[in-house]
Length: 88
Image (cartoon, rainbow, N blue to C red; front, side, top):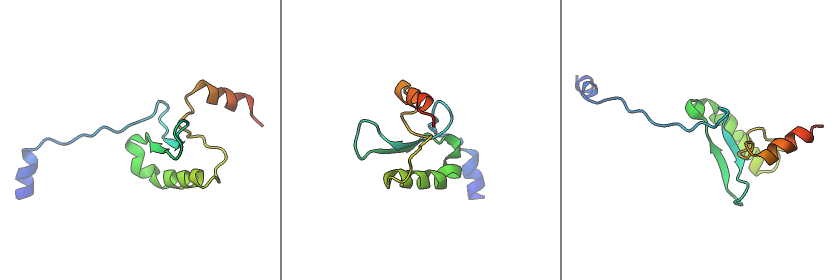
């Protein structure tokens, strides 16, 4: 009864969840600050993508990840041009 009465008088809490422009998370090294890694922008899929994000970030930090499609700088023109013209 206590929880039922308590829930009747409190509105639900809604928090903001950051989402990137394309809907995919930002995972990788910051381009201007050494030793700063970003793992953000998962939106409502944070728990769902957490294991993959942790594994990808571990591979980036240990320099075993060569091609990172979720790089935080993927929205810059320089990144787009390099990925477009350097296809193998």
